[in-house]
Image (cartoon, rainbow, N blue to C red; front, side, top):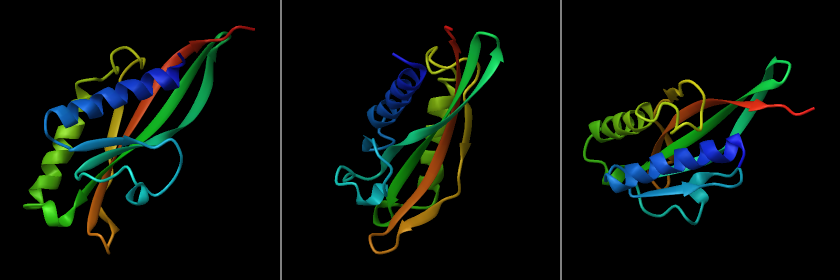
Length: 146
């Protein structure tokens, strides 16, 4: 498997751990770019939606390339299910902690995983869905064969 597949699987494992620990009720992996609030698989809030990555690459030395993968995870919550605003902060903390403790994604990424989260905003006024994003930047080296 390639770097992108291995990194994605380790992120999925982290999201599954958030489900197992009761921080989220569901995780969904989008295989296309679309509005996650309209995905028919998103039905049990709070939910984490893994969005397809963007990537860049740079050649470090003659035969080594450094692949950079940026994955976004959108955490969706129904306003009606929130007790207080600290529920959002608690979920942010749990998500950041989960991936901070998987800093190399079990060896799928070289070096440290860079984490950053976006602001909380309303995704869908009509359905009362709030969201925040967690950006996961992972780097992995690949040996070139030419």
